[in-house]
Image (cartoon, rainbow, N blue to C red; front, top):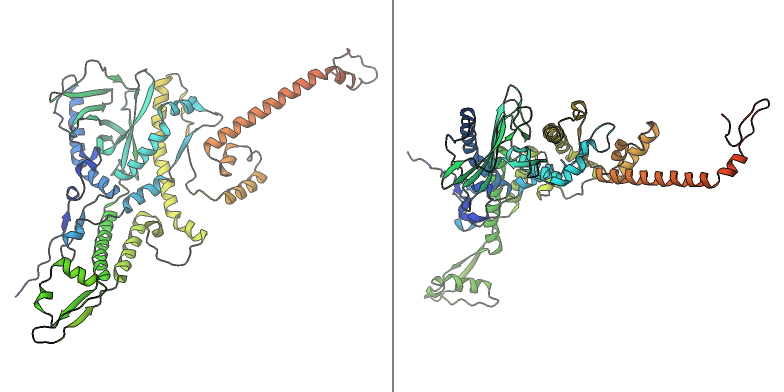
Length: 510
């Protein structure tokens, strides 16, 4: 009884197809931290050991997610039909990057707002000084890739608070389930040319500690004193995508099912490439030819195949050779399968299948249908904004407390994060909704909420309000000048007092 043996899944490693130096720096990091460091307390050394183990256990998975995002994922084929010449030079699909970037582009941070405060706690200048908007957007992107990223609060060289961002590839954190915040965090802040970590920043419950590695030994640098934390709490905060009670640090948008779908689509692309080679050069069979034709080299055979005029001699028996062309298989099965993979990936990531470059319908899609396809992604963006917003507020409140310990706690709790509307309606739709609401709600038209509903961005609203104040100030100043110039005439034209009353000249009615 014979057995049919199916080859195991064959994987073409990333290293064989891409130069090592082209892979992201963080994905090549290596950490060799000791179990105990002089200067740390026993509790801090225990936390450092736990953080090291967490980083090691997740480093391989994070590097894999990065490779999929950068379209450097290895090809996982079955070793049945695809030759190595195709698998070694295939073009990976960028679907993982598309899934991440499309959601990132809908989660746009615009600033902080608070009732009755135009610039709460002077945060606008603070954010501009540290480039907070830009680095936050990058942190949101990496949170979608790896499931989470981190915001930390510390002091800059001038003693002022600063906010830094850290990727999951270069960081590790421990979660305090009882108090629902980070218990301790470790971030790799420096490395040598070989990718070995040479600097660590520890965010402990009581203090922030810098560690450096010199001559193979970790220690606390004497010129960098530990920073005391505020309120005895770790000053690291998570940006987690879809966190749960089981997974408080969220989950990657490049889920395991999404990666397997990408693997299948990559195999389909390779099969289509092989089919295209035969389709471009159909197979020709020459029957009854001479030995000279049979012994041709590959270059001679190709020259004969591509030549405009060709002649084939008779065989040794004097019979004329016959030429038979084998028709190549059509490309339709591959394209149909690719569309199926695209539909499955779109369903797994809630993005329109048309955004993946696979057109399933030749008819143009209406604006309403396109908006309906984006509805699930818009809902995801709103939920992500809500989860990110809580951590961002915790971070900024901590920074304000460091800058001004006397800041009102009640005012801090009024802070809210202002996000761009992820649905991004057309200008005409926004204007129509604005005009209807402004006519039915008193004061809506001039409020910041109303202007945002009209489609104006946060920066446009700030500039508009400033121009309005400037125009009002100029108008009031002009009125005061006119009253001063015409004051005497105005007094003469003022109404006379009623009969039986007395009035001082020039004072007007009392």
